[in-house]
Length: 140
Ligand code: TYD
Image (tube, rainbow, N blue to C red; front, side, top):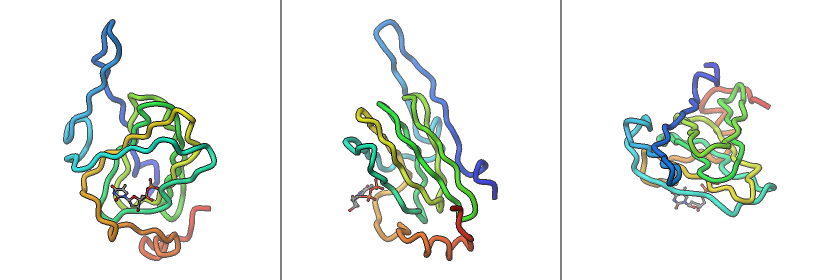
């Protein structure tokens, strides 16, 4: 499958007024799943690479509510790089997509929403194992 048909860029509305911005994301409305867990990543510098895994059950929406970062997605055949650089932009990632997050700006706060409670056993942390599972030949 074409990787551009697997991830999705979401654009959230702004309910802000003269007092400032207000962005609302509701599960099963703005976010294509019921939100069960929220975590956020900050204080990762520009040299750090996070992620480096695929998830069997978790879907994600990533939002850089402050600052910027890059996400590299890989489906075992091809890759794409998405820059998260606006608080109203979300990146939807389905299950079983390999992902790396990197080039975090100093002020980066990366908010992550997901449809699952944490379960370490649903993570695939070996790229070789990931390729085997998806029958991929490698994107790099
Ligand atoms: P890790 O998956 O390496 O983070 P990232 O995907 O951002 O690189 O997670 C780091 C540690 O935190 C690891 O020991 C698992 C733990 N963790 C939880 O306990 N619950 C969670 O929801 C997450 C995302 C991680």
